[in-house]
Length: 254
Ligand code: NAD
Ligand code: ZN
Image (cartoon, rainbow, N blue to C red; front, side, top):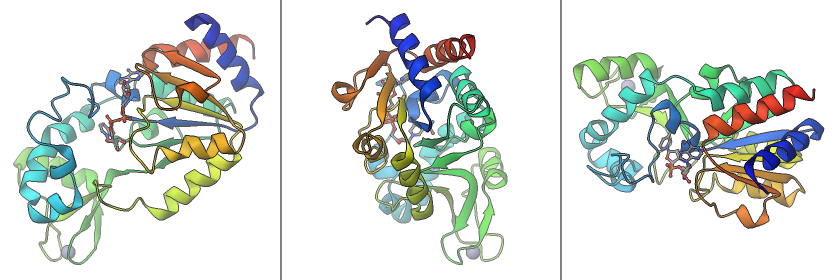
């Protein structure tokens, strides 16, 4: 099946689905200029291994190394704008064709695109928590200060290090968010997997839960994924091109 046929078929599945859910990974945000971890030239692997520096153990042992590593990524995220793929998903939700999004991303671009139901399995930068007194702070204010001063963000009450509410390697996923995402996956009769290698567990189990419940699967990714063989439709392409095409196809026949 060529891409045009696959888009027509995916559009037909979206129109007839009663509960379509999107599962998104770092690949949906690369067209917004935020590198994924796997692409060789992303730079995120270049200076340090994220598995070490961006792990909870690495953070506790050496918060300075974590903040040095996260600085360029945080700067990119704060400046990034949603791309056509994020906007298309927001539009699908508005049109009643998408029940919600489960994302691995921490970049907040689905919210900025206008999507309402978004389960952020790996957290976000909107909040930061004190590692000593656990007071919650405005994460974006703390991050902006950090980007200017390069000083580790600290708690206004006790001056201990603040940790952004992003889930580091080795940390548990936020349980409420995970439960909501699992419940939505169980209800799904169509799962769109977009820009994820599906290699980061347990987040990658969400499309499998939908699959086990009988949902059809559409995969939109630049390279093959672990679920391709089971999927009804696989579209190898750039999400920021494929999703607007899919939206046009759905709107034309609405
Ligand atoms: P991932 O495992 O989700 O892999 C990204 C996938 O997207 C790859 O298979 C790649 O081929 C594909 N891809 C890249 N650009 C694409 C495009 N334009 N269209 C379609 N597909 C595209 O993600 P990862 O990079 O291995 O990240 C692992 C974890 O790190 C994530 O789960 C996330 O928590 C975190 N992370 C988040 C961000 C973000 O918030 N934007 C960025 C990097 C990493
Ligand atoms: Zn504190």
